[in-house]
Structures are given as structure tokens and as C-alpha cells.
Image 1: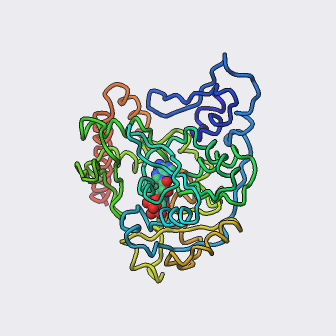
Image 2: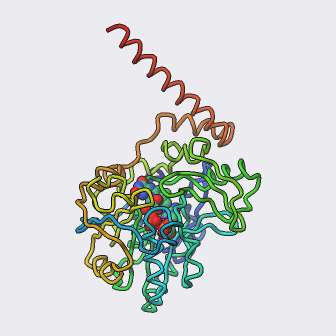
Image 3: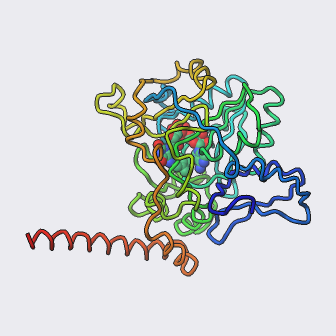
Length: 375
Ligand SMILES: Cc1cc2nc3c(=O)[nH]c(=O)nc-3n(C[C@H](O)[C@H](O)[C@H](O)COP(=O)(O)OP(=O)(O)OC[C@H]3O[C@@H](n4cnc5c(N)ncnc54)[C@H](O)[C@@H]3O)c2cc1C
């Protein structure tokens, strides 16, 4: 291991920096990937440890501005997860001959960060994939683009952004880093288990996890819906929301706080006040946007005409969005789920723990009525 297993975010910075390709990213029994050094290739340069964001100081920035915002492009907004901010920013970058990096489903059914230089391919990045996206070799490509003086937009979770910063080890004026507020990530193995259980094979284009503010598990193949499972029937979505399947480090994520590591942060504006002008748009998706750096501010000024925006107090966003305050709290049945998973597989394991949730809820109800009757 490079850092302690419980601290590793799987940002792939060590994997990209190694001059001998001596680091492999290997899945553990639950499908979470961790770096492993191949001792016979390693030259002990220690670069992997020198740049690991979990072992070294990471710079955090205080948001200077907070906005409620959505894209004026209604087609983008409808197809996006929240206010369509990520896709609108990405489109602007491509139109200005830049390159965008973001998470996409691949033909093999994996979720990976890819490089996009054509507008036609941007739809692959659109939509939240509630799973750990693999960065693979992409950080080397980011550096290459920047060295060629290209404009680059990288969108990812805060731990991925910290990985980009540490890997590059210097600021580039043409690099814009956007992080998404993050609840935590399940493993790709869990996602594949869920797809296999519903579809019987991994032959899919993608999974749509959200329909505006509604969570779902919609499988798309050849641009058509194969099936759509609502939240309460999707063990994958329920387990994600219940924080039972997140990567170990997510439960003590150092990035789940009010200060940020990126130039711009985006997320859902869940705490938007009824008094806000954009409140009546909330059902169609209104995002929160935080601007930390001068570079982020300048970039936003250039493309602000693409958005409906309203300045709001940062406290309002923090109030409605737990992961701007603290990491997700591990579910009480987390360990039990993992034990069952190894024995019975994803569906049966979740079925068993959800039986325990129901039992716990009934006991709580009984206790309440018992106390009331005693009074
Ligand atoms: C795992 C996960 C957890 C999240 N938790 C929260 C939360 O707790 N609170 C909150 O307010 N918002 C959360 N979000 C963010 C939210 O769901 C939206 O992604 C965000 O508001 C952007 O919406 P949009 O309409 O602008 O993006 P879109 O225009 O739909 O584009 C989506 C963007 O997200 C990126 N992306 C998608 N999946 C991933 C991934 N797995 N890893 C890295 N980048 C990805 C894509 O590259 C793309 O740029 C989470 C997102 C993810 C992926």
C-alpha cells in the first residue's frame, strides 16, 4: 500500500506518477480498487508517497461566492442530473477549442474518466454515475494537454481533484478544476452485480440514476430504456443512499467540508430557501455553485450568460447539503452487509440487512406506543 487502506481514495495519482509503471490498481473482495506496488519493478523513488493526497498537505480554498444556478439550455438541463451546469461548462470549453475530462460508461460497462474533445461526445459525461469512476491513465493526458497550452476542464469528485492537483504539482492558468459535492462512492463491482441481477448481462450503454430530483435505476441500451427500477425497489440505489456501500475512506472523507479543493464546486441546491427567486424552478433542477478561486471567478464571468443565476448565502447551501459539513455517516449494518455480501452476493445481502432495517423501525414504533400508553 502507498497510504493506509482506510485513507486511500483511489484517486490514481500514484498510478499515474510512477515512472516504472510499477503500480497496479487492484480490486479487493468488495470491488474497491487500491494501489499495489510490484516490488520487482519499483525503483524506490518514493514519488507515489510524495504526491499522495492522503499523505501530504492539501490546499483548501474558502468559497467566495455561492449561487443558485441552472443552465439556460433546457435540453441540457432536462438530460442532466441537476441544473446542467457541468455539461454547459463542458460545452463552452469545447466551443473554445478546449478539452474536457469527466466520467463516462465504457463499452465494457465500466465507469471511467475519459478525454472529450468533440461536442458530439459530451453526452457520455452527462448525468451522475453514483459509483467510483476510474481515472486510469487520464492524468498523464491532462498534463500533456496543458503542456500543449490547451484549455482543460476536469470535473470529478473532490478527492479526484486533489489527485489531479498533486499529480500536476503546479498551477496551470488554462486548467479549470470543478468538483462535485460528493456523498461517497460505491464500488463498480456492486454496480455490476446490480446490473447483472436486473438485466442478466452487462451489455448496456449506461445507467441513469436520476430523473430530475427523483433517484432511479434506469438501464439504457441502444438509446432505449431496457428497464427502470424506482428507488424503493432498487437495492443498489437504496444501499447508496443508506450509506451502506460506500468506499471505506468516504466515511471519514476530509473533503466533505465547507472549504473546497477546486476552482468551482457544483451540487444540488437542496437547501434553497422558498424566498429565492429560483425556488419555483427547484423541481426541474437547481444547482448550487461555489466559486473559490480568482481563476474560477474569471471563468464564470466569461460564461455567465449561459446560466440563470442568483447569489445566495453559503450558509443556506451548507444547511441543506450534509456533505458540505461532514462525511456520510456509516450505516450501522455496514459490517453485517459486507459479511453477508461475501457469503450470499449483493441482492441477498441487501435483502437481509433491509429486513433488519424494517425490524429496527418496527421496534422503534412499538417502543413509542408503549411509552405513550404508559403515560
Ligand atoms: C458519486 C456522487 C455523489 C454525489 N453526491 C452528492 C451530494 O451528496 N450532494 C450534492 O449536492 N450533489 C452530489 N452529487 C452531485 C450531483 O449528483 C450532480 O452530479 C451535480 O450536481 C452536477 O449536476 P449537473 O446537472 O451540473 O451535471 P451533468 O450536466 O449531469 O454532468 C454530470 C457531471 O458529473 C460528472 N460525474 C458523473 N459521475 C461521476 C463520478 N462517479 N465521479 C466523478 N464525476 C462524475 C461527469 O463527468 C459530468 O461532468 C454527487 C455526484 C456523484 C457522482
